[in-house]
Image (cartoon, rainbow, N blue to C red; front, side, top):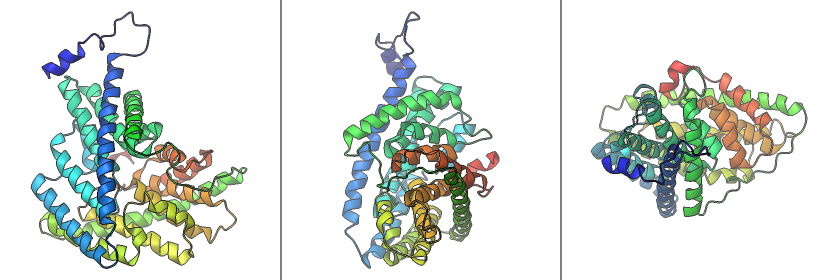
Length: 418
Protein backbone atom coordinates (compact mmCIF):
# COMPACT_ATOMS: atom_id res chain seq x y z
CA UNK A 1 0.00 0.00 0.00
CA UNK A 2 2.84 2.42 0.88
CA UNK A 3 4.49 1.74 -2.48
CA UNK A 4 1.27 2.48 -4.35
CA UNK A 5 0.68 5.71 -2.44
CA UNK A 6 4.28 6.85 -2.94
CA UNK A 7 3.94 5.99 -6.63
CA UNK A 8 0.88 8.21 -6.84
CA UNK A 9 2.91 11.09 -5.40
CA UNK A 10 4.99 11.02 -8.54
CA UNK A 11 4.81 14.41 -10.34
CA UNK A 12 2.91 12.85 -13.22
CA UNK A 13 -0.03 12.23 -10.88
CA UNK A 14 0.10 15.52 -9.03
CA UNK A 15 -2.32 18.02 -10.50
CA UNK A 16 -1.96 21.42 -8.92
CA UNK A 17 -4.82 23.71 -8.04
CA UNK A 18 -3.73 25.91 -10.95
CA UNK A 19 -4.34 23.09 -13.41
CA UNK A 20 -6.66 24.55 -16.11
CA UNK A 21 -7.93 21.14 -17.22
CA UNK A 22 -10.57 18.81 -15.87
CA UNK A 23 -7.96 16.02 -15.97
CA UNK A 24 -7.06 14.91 -12.44
CA UNK A 25 -5.17 12.17 -10.62
CA UNK A 26 -8.43 10.28 -10.19
CA UNK A 27 -9.08 10.37 -13.92
CA UNK A 28 -5.72 8.71 -14.54
CA UNK A 29 -6.43 6.06 -11.91
CA UNK A 30 -9.72 5.12 -13.56
CA UNK A 31 -7.97 4.89 -16.92
CA UNK A 32 -5.31 2.60 -15.40
CA UNK A 33 -8.04 0.44 -13.93
CA UNK A 34 -9.62 0.18 -17.37
CA UNK A 35 -6.29 -0.81 -18.91
CA UNK A 36 -5.97 -3.71 -16.49
CA UNK A 37 -9.57 -4.74 -17.12
CA UNK A 38 -8.96 -4.67 -20.87
CA UNK A 39 -5.83 -6.81 -20.53
CA UNK A 40 -7.54 -9.38 -18.34
CA UNK A 41 -10.62 -9.46 -20.58
CA UNK A 42 -8.50 -9.97 -23.69
CA UNK A 43 -6.58 -12.81 -22.04
CA UNK A 44 -9.82 -14.41 -20.84
CA UNK A 45 -11.32 -14.13 -24.33
CA UNK A 46 -8.23 -15.64 -26.01
CA UNK A 47 -8.21 -18.63 -23.65
CA UNK A 48 -11.96 -19.03 -24.09
CA UNK A 49 -11.62 -19.04 -27.90
CA UNK A 50 -8.89 -21.69 -27.73
CA UNK A 51 -10.86 -23.97 -25.41
CA UNK A 52 -14.10 -23.51 -27.35
CA UNK A 53 -12.42 -24.36 -30.65
CA UNK A 54 -10.99 -27.54 -29.14
CA UNK A 55 -14.15 -28.73 -27.40
CA UNK A 56 -16.45 -27.84 -30.29
CA UNK A 57 -14.80 -30.61 -32.33
CA UNK A 58 -16.81 -33.12 -30.31
CA UNK A 59 -20.14 -33.69 -32.02
CA UNK A 60 -22.97 -36.22 -31.98
CA UNK A 61 -23.24 -38.50 -28.97
CA UNK A 62 -19.84 -37.37 -27.70
CA UNK A 63 -21.41 -34.01 -26.79
CA UNK A 64 -23.21 -35.71 -23.91
CA UNK A 65 -19.99 -37.27 -22.63
CA UNK A 66 -17.98 -34.06 -22.94
CA UNK A 67 -20.57 -31.93 -21.15
CA UNK A 68 -20.98 -34.53 -18.41
CA UNK A 69 -17.22 -34.57 -17.79
CA UNK A 70 -17.16 -30.77 -17.94
CA UNK A 71 -19.90 -30.65 -15.31
CA UNK A 72 -17.87 -32.90 -13.03
CA UNK A 73 -14.73 -30.77 -13.44
CA UNK A 74 -16.66 -27.54 -12.88
CA UNK A 75 -18.06 -28.93 -9.65
CA UNK A 76 -14.66 -30.14 -8.48
CA UNK A 77 -13.10 -26.74 -9.18
CA UNK A 78 -15.77 -25.02 -7.11
CA UNK A 79 -15.59 -27.70 -4.40
CA UNK A 80 -11.82 -27.31 -3.89
CA UNK A 81 -11.28 -23.64 -4.79
CA UNK A 82 -14.37 -22.29 -3.08
CA UNK A 83 -17.81 -21.00 -4.04
CA UNK A 84 -17.25 -18.03 -6.40
CA UNK A 85 -20.68 -16.52 -5.81
CA UNK A 86 -22.98 -15.02 -8.42
CA UNK A 87 -24.09 -11.58 -9.58
CA UNK A 88 -26.53 -11.38 -6.65
CA UNK A 89 -23.58 -11.48 -4.25
CA UNK A 90 -21.80 -8.74 -6.19
CA UNK A 91 -24.89 -6.51 -6.02
CA UNK A 92 -25.27 -7.13 -2.29
CA UNK A 93 -21.63 -6.20 -1.72
CA UNK A 94 -22.03 -2.98 -3.69
CA UNK A 95 -25.08 -1.99 -1.66
CA UNK A 96 -24.34 -3.21 1.82
CA UNK A 97 -20.54 -3.53 2.04
CA UNK A 98 -19.71 -0.21 0.43
CA UNK A 99 -18.52 -1.83 -2.78
CA UNK A 100 -16.00 -4.31 -1.33
CA UNK A 101 -15.57 -7.42 -3.48
CA UNK A 102 -13.30 -10.21 -2.29
CA UNK A 103 -10.70 -11.18 -4.95
CA UNK A 104 -10.01 -14.55 -3.30
CA UNK A 105 -12.97 -16.00 -5.23
CA UNK A 106 -11.55 -14.98 -8.62
CA UNK A 107 -9.60 -18.20 -9.42
CA UNK A 108 -12.69 -20.33 -8.82
CA UNK A 109 -14.89 -17.97 -10.83
CA UNK A 110 -12.49 -17.61 -13.77
CA UNK A 111 -11.62 -21.31 -14.13
CA UNK A 112 -15.13 -22.69 -13.63
CA UNK A 113 -16.56 -20.10 -16.02
CA UNK A 114 -13.99 -20.87 -18.72
CA UNK A 115 -14.89 -24.54 -18.59
CA UNK A 116 -18.63 -23.87 -18.36
CA UNK A 117 -18.68 -21.59 -21.38
CA UNK A 118 -16.19 -23.42 -23.62
CA UNK A 119 -17.81 -26.84 -23.14
CA UNK A 120 -21.19 -25.54 -24.26
CA UNK A 121 -23.09 -24.24 -21.25
CA UNK A 122 -25.77 -21.64 -21.94
CA UNK A 123 -23.98 -18.87 -20.08
CA UNK A 124 -21.69 -16.10 -21.31
CA UNK A 125 -18.40 -14.57 -20.16
CA UNK A 126 -19.81 -11.27 -18.90
CA UNK A 127 -20.35 -12.53 -15.32
CA UNK A 128 -16.73 -13.64 -14.67
CA UNK A 129 -15.37 -10.53 -16.38
CA UNK A 130 -17.55 -8.24 -14.27
CA UNK A 131 -16.72 -10.03 -11.03
CA UNK A 132 -12.96 -10.23 -11.56
CA UNK A 133 -12.47 -6.68 -12.83
CA UNK A 134 -14.86 -5.31 -10.21
CA UNK A 135 -12.97 -7.08 -7.41
CA UNK A 136 -9.69 -5.68 -8.72
CA UNK A 137 -11.20 -2.19 -8.62
CA UNK A 138 -12.21 -2.88 -5.01
CA UNK A 139 -8.72 -4.15 -4.14
CA UNK A 140 -7.11 -1.17 -5.86
CA UNK A 141 -9.33 1.26 -3.96
CA UNK A 142 -8.51 -0.37 -0.61
CA UNK A 143 -4.78 -0.17 -1.33
CA UNK A 144 -5.24 3.54 -1.96
CA UNK A 145 -7.04 3.90 1.35
CA UNK A 146 -10.34 4.86 -0.27
CA UNK A 147 -13.64 4.48 1.54
CA UNK A 148 -17.34 5.14 1.01
CA UNK A 149 -18.40 6.51 -2.35
CA UNK A 150 -14.83 6.56 -3.70
CA UNK A 151 -14.34 2.84 -3.03
CA UNK A 152 -17.73 1.97 -4.48
CA UNK A 153 -17.07 4.10 -7.58
CA UNK A 154 -13.77 2.31 -8.19
CA UNK A 155 -15.51 -1.06 -7.90
CA UNK A 156 -18.31 -0.06 -10.25
CA UNK A 157 -15.77 1.37 -12.70
CA UNK A 158 -14.00 -1.99 -12.72
CA UNK A 159 -17.27 -3.81 -13.35
CA UNK A 160 -18.15 -1.47 -16.19
CA UNK A 161 -14.73 -1.95 -17.79
CA UNK A 162 -15.06 -5.72 -17.78
CA UNK A 163 -18.56 -5.57 -19.20
CA UNK A 164 -17.61 -3.09 -21.92
CA UNK A 165 -14.65 -5.18 -23.07
CA UNK A 166 -17.02 -7.92 -24.18
CA UNK A 167 -19.92 -5.86 -25.51
CA UNK A 168 -17.95 -3.08 -27.16
CA UNK A 169 -20.11 -0.23 -25.90
CA UNK A 170 -18.49 2.05 -23.30
CA UNK A 171 -21.75 3.94 -22.82
CA UNK A 172 -23.89 0.81 -22.60
CA UNK A 173 -21.38 -1.02 -20.41
CA UNK A 174 -21.11 1.85 -17.94
CA UNK A 175 -24.87 2.24 -17.69
CA UNK A 176 -25.38 -1.51 -17.34
CA UNK A 177 -22.95 -1.67 -14.40
CA UNK A 178 -25.09 0.97 -12.68
CA UNK A 179 -28.51 -0.25 -13.80
CA UNK A 180 -27.95 -3.88 -12.77
CA UNK A 181 -27.47 -2.57 -9.21
CA UNK A 182 -30.97 -1.15 -9.46
CA UNK A 183 -32.40 0.05 -6.20
CA UNK A 184 -35.38 2.41 -6.12
CA UNK A 185 -33.95 4.82 -8.65
CA UNK A 186 -32.83 2.96 -11.80
CA UNK A 187 -29.31 4.49 -11.66
CA UNK A 188 -28.74 5.11 -7.96
CA UNK A 189 -24.94 5.45 -7.78
CA UNK A 190 -24.75 8.27 -10.28
CA UNK A 191 -21.47 9.55 -8.78
CA UNK A 192 -19.81 6.51 -10.39
CA UNK A 193 -21.03 7.38 -13.89
CA UNK A 194 -17.97 9.32 -15.11
CA UNK A 195 -15.49 6.88 -13.51
CA UNK A 196 -17.35 4.03 -15.23
CA UNK A 197 -17.13 5.83 -18.58
CA UNK A 198 -13.38 6.44 -18.22
CA UNK A 199 -12.58 2.86 -17.28
CA UNK A 200 -14.89 1.51 -19.99
CA UNK A 201 -13.29 3.54 -22.76
CA UNK A 202 -9.72 2.57 -21.83
CA UNK A 203 -10.71 -1.09 -21.36
CA UNK A 204 -12.42 -1.18 -24.75
CA UNK A 205 -9.39 0.29 -26.51
CA UNK A 206 -7.03 -2.23 -24.91
CA UNK A 207 -9.38 -5.15 -25.62
CA UNK A 208 -9.63 -4.17 -29.30
CA UNK A 209 -5.86 -3.81 -29.53
CA UNK A 210 -5.25 -7.24 -27.97
CA UNK A 211 -7.90 -9.16 -29.92
CA UNK A 212 -9.18 -9.33 -33.48
CA UNK A 213 -12.61 -7.99 -32.56
CA UNK A 214 -13.69 -5.13 -34.83
CA UNK A 215 -15.64 -2.01 -33.92
CA UNK A 216 -18.57 -2.79 -36.19
CA UNK A 217 -21.77 -4.61 -35.21
CA UNK A 218 -21.29 -8.04 -33.64
CA UNK A 219 -24.36 -9.51 -35.32
CA UNK A 220 -25.16 -9.01 -38.98
CA UNK A 221 -28.81 -8.01 -39.04
CA UNK A 222 -30.57 -6.58 -42.09
CA UNK A 223 -30.69 -2.81 -41.69
CA UNK A 224 -33.81 -1.54 -39.98
CA UNK A 225 -35.45 1.20 -42.04
CA UNK A 226 -37.49 3.49 -39.73
CA UNK A 227 -41.12 3.99 -40.66
CA UNK A 228 -43.74 6.17 -39.01
CA UNK A 229 -45.69 6.28 -35.79
CA UNK A 230 -46.75 2.69 -36.36
CA UNK A 231 -43.21 1.58 -35.45
CA UNK A 232 -43.83 2.66 -31.87
CA UNK A 233 -47.13 0.80 -31.80
CA UNK A 234 -45.44 -2.34 -33.07
CA UNK A 235 -42.59 -1.87 -30.59
CA UNK A 236 -44.99 -1.78 -27.64
CA UNK A 237 -46.71 -4.91 -28.93
CA UNK A 238 -43.38 -6.68 -29.36
CA UNK A 239 -42.41 -5.53 -25.88
CA UNK A 240 -45.52 -7.21 -24.51
CA UNK A 241 -44.58 -10.40 -26.36
CA UNK A 242 -41.07 -10.19 -24.90
CA UNK A 243 -42.53 -9.80 -21.42
CA UNK A 244 -44.56 -12.98 -21.99
CA UNK A 245 -41.33 -14.79 -22.86
CA UNK A 246 -39.83 -13.33 -19.68
CA UNK A 247 -42.67 -14.80 -17.63
CA UNK A 248 -42.07 -18.21 -19.22
CA UNK A 249 -38.35 -17.87 -18.46
CA UNK A 250 -39.04 -17.02 -14.84
CA UNK A 251 -41.49 -19.91 -14.45
CA UNK A 252 -38.99 -22.43 -15.81
CA UNK A 253 -36.29 -20.94 -13.58
CA UNK A 254 -38.41 -21.50 -10.48
CA UNK A 255 -38.90 -25.15 -11.49
CA UNK A 256 -35.22 -25.84 -12.22
CA UNK A 257 -34.02 -23.97 -9.14
CA UNK A 258 -36.41 -25.92 -6.91
CA UNK A 259 -35.47 -29.23 -8.54
CA UNK A 260 -31.71 -28.78 -8.14
CA UNK A 261 -32.13 -27.50 -4.59
CA UNK A 262 -33.47 -30.95 -3.71
CA UNK A 263 -30.13 -32.57 -4.63
CA UNK A 264 -28.54 -32.76 -1.17
CA UNK A 265 -25.09 -33.74 -2.38
CA UNK A 266 -21.80 -31.88 -2.98
CA UNK A 267 -21.75 -29.28 -5.75
CA UNK A 268 -19.97 -31.57 -8.21
CA UNK A 269 -22.97 -33.94 -8.19
CA UNK A 270 -25.29 -31.08 -9.22
CA UNK A 271 -22.96 -29.79 -11.92
CA UNK A 272 -22.44 -33.30 -13.31
CA UNK A 273 -26.18 -33.93 -13.49
CA UNK A 274 -26.58 -30.51 -15.10
CA UNK A 275 -23.94 -31.48 -17.67
CA UNK A 276 -25.84 -34.64 -18.57
CA UNK A 277 -29.06 -32.67 -19.14
CA UNK A 278 -27.32 -29.93 -21.11
CA UNK A 279 -25.55 -32.53 -23.25
CA UNK A 280 -28.84 -34.25 -24.07
CA UNK A 281 -30.47 -30.96 -25.03
CA UNK A 282 -27.46 -29.96 -27.18
CA UNK A 283 -27.47 -33.37 -28.88
CA UNK A 284 -31.14 -32.98 -29.76
CA UNK A 285 -30.78 -29.33 -30.85
CA UNK A 286 -27.16 -28.18 -31.46
CA UNK A 287 -28.19 -24.50 -31.60
CA UNK A 288 -28.80 -24.58 -27.85
CA UNK A 289 -25.12 -25.31 -27.18
CA UNK A 290 -22.93 -22.36 -26.16
CA UNK A 291 -24.01 -18.90 -25.12
CA UNK A 292 -25.23 -17.60 -28.46
CA UNK A 293 -22.47 -15.18 -29.48
CA UNK A 294 -21.79 -16.96 -32.79
CA UNK A 295 -25.07 -18.84 -33.02
CA UNK A 296 -27.14 -15.65 -33.07
CA UNK A 297 -25.98 -14.82 -36.60
CA UNK A 298 -27.25 -18.25 -37.66
CA UNK A 299 -30.72 -17.48 -36.33
CA UNK A 300 -31.10 -14.63 -38.81
CA UNK A 301 -30.63 -16.96 -41.79
CA UNK A 302 -31.91 -20.30 -40.43
CA UNK A 303 -34.96 -21.63 -42.24
CA UNK A 304 -37.87 -22.91 -40.18
CA UNK A 305 -41.49 -22.42 -39.22
CA UNK A 306 -43.04 -21.18 -35.99
CA UNK A 307 -43.04 -24.69 -34.51
CA UNK A 308 -39.26 -25.02 -34.99
CA UNK A 309 -38.46 -21.62 -33.51
CA UNK A 310 -40.97 -21.98 -30.69
CA UNK A 311 -39.39 -25.31 -29.71
CA UNK A 312 -35.89 -23.86 -30.00
CA UNK A 313 -36.82 -20.92 -27.75
CA UNK A 314 -38.22 -23.23 -25.07
CA UNK A 315 -35.20 -25.55 -25.22
CA UNK A 316 -32.80 -22.60 -24.97
CA UNK A 317 -34.70 -21.17 -21.99
CA UNK A 318 -34.51 -24.59 -20.35
CA UNK A 319 -30.77 -24.87 -21.10
CA UNK A 320 -30.06 -21.43 -19.61
CA UNK A 321 -31.93 -22.24 -16.43
CA UNK A 322 -30.33 -25.67 -16.04
CA UNK A 323 -26.93 -24.00 -16.50
CA UNK A 324 -27.65 -21.48 -13.76
CA UNK A 325 -29.52 -23.77 -11.37
CA UNK A 326 -27.05 -26.66 -11.53
CA UNK A 327 -24.06 -24.52 -10.55
CA UNK A 328 -22.41 -23.95 -13.92
CA UNK A 329 -20.93 -20.45 -14.12
CA UNK A 330 -21.39 -17.56 -16.54
CA UNK A 331 -23.72 -14.71 -17.44
CA UNK A 332 -27.11 -14.68 -19.12
CA UNK A 333 -27.13 -11.46 -21.17
CA UNK A 334 -26.14 -12.84 -24.57
CA UNK A 335 -28.13 -16.07 -24.03
CA UNK A 336 -31.19 -13.88 -23.40
CA UNK A 337 -30.49 -11.92 -26.59
CA UNK A 338 -30.40 -15.28 -28.38
CA UNK A 339 -33.76 -16.25 -26.89
CA UNK A 340 -35.18 -12.89 -27.96
CA UNK A 341 -33.97 -13.35 -31.54
CA UNK A 342 -35.45 -16.85 -31.70
CA UNK A 343 -38.73 -15.54 -30.30
CA UNK A 344 -38.61 -12.86 -32.99
CA UNK A 345 -38.33 -15.51 -35.70
CA UNK A 346 -41.27 -17.30 -34.05
CA UNK A 347 -43.46 -14.18 -34.28
CA UNK A 348 -42.44 -13.52 -37.88
CA UNK A 349 -44.95 -16.14 -38.98
CA UNK A 350 -47.68 -14.02 -37.42
CA UNK A 351 -46.32 -10.59 -38.51
CA UNK A 352 -44.89 -11.40 -41.97
CA UNK A 353 -45.04 -7.82 -43.25
CA UNK A 354 -43.05 -6.35 -40.36
CA UNK A 355 -39.39 -5.38 -40.82
CA UNK A 356 -37.43 -8.52 -39.86
CA UNK A 357 -34.54 -6.92 -38.01
CA UNK A 358 -36.85 -4.51 -36.18
CA UNK A 359 -38.96 -7.41 -34.93
CA UNK A 360 -35.92 -9.41 -33.78
CA UNK A 361 -34.20 -6.49 -32.06
CA UNK A 362 -37.38 -5.46 -30.23
CA UNK A 363 -37.82 -9.00 -28.90
CA UNK A 364 -34.14 -9.17 -27.91
CA UNK A 365 -34.49 -5.92 -25.98
CA UNK A 366 -37.77 -6.73 -24.27
CA UNK A 367 -36.79 -10.27 -23.23
CA UNK A 368 -33.51 -9.11 -21.71
CA UNK A 369 -35.11 -6.12 -19.99
CA UNK A 370 -37.84 -8.38 -18.63
CA UNK A 371 -35.36 -10.72 -16.96
CA UNK A 372 -32.45 -8.45 -15.97
CA UNK A 373 -34.48 -5.28 -15.25
CA UNK A 374 -32.11 -3.10 -17.33
CA UNK A 375 -34.23 -1.42 -20.04
CA UNK A 376 -32.02 1.60 -20.69
CA UNK A 377 -28.60 -0.04 -20.99
CA UNK A 378 -30.10 -2.98 -22.89
CA UNK A 379 -31.34 -0.63 -25.60
CA UNK A 380 -27.99 1.13 -25.88
CA UNK A 381 -26.07 -2.15 -25.97
CA UNK A 382 -28.22 -3.46 -28.82
CA UNK A 383 -27.59 -0.29 -30.78
CA UNK A 384 -23.91 -1.18 -31.06
CA UNK A 385 -24.29 -4.96 -31.23
CA UNK A 386 -26.79 -4.92 -34.11
CA UNK A 387 -25.95 -1.63 -35.81
CA UNK A 388 -29.50 -0.29 -35.55
CA UNK A 389 -29.48 3.38 -36.52
CA UNK A 390 -32.66 4.48 -34.76
CA UNK A 391 -33.05 2.94 -31.33
CA UNK A 392 -35.97 5.04 -30.00
CA UNK A 393 -38.71 2.54 -30.98
CA UNK A 394 -36.53 -0.25 -29.53
CA UNK A 395 -36.50 1.65 -26.23
CA UNK A 396 -40.32 1.48 -26.23
CA UNK A 397 -40.09 -2.31 -26.59
CA UNK A 398 -37.49 -2.52 -23.86
CA UNK A 399 -39.54 -0.43 -21.44
CA UNK A 400 -42.69 -2.42 -22.22
CA UNK A 401 -40.84 -5.65 -21.47
CA UNK A 402 -39.54 -4.18 -18.23
CA UNK A 403 -42.81 -2.79 -16.85
CA UNK A 404 -44.77 -5.96 -17.71
CA UNK A 405 -42.12 -8.32 -16.32
CA UNK A 406 -42.53 -10.41 -13.15
CA UNK A 407 -42.23 -8.34 -9.99
CA UNK A 408 -40.08 -11.06 -8.43
CA UNK A 409 -36.74 -10.61 -10.26
CA UNK A 410 -34.46 -13.30 -11.63
CA UNK A 411 -31.55 -11.69 -9.73
CA UNK A 412 -32.69 -12.06 -6.15
CA UNK A 413 -30.78 -9.04 -4.78
CA UNK A 414 -32.92 -6.75 -6.97
CA UNK A 415 -35.98 -7.85 -5.00
CA UNK A 416 -36.21 -4.80 -2.74
CA UNK A 417 -36.13 -2.43 -5.69
CA UNK A 418 -39.13 -3.50 -7.74
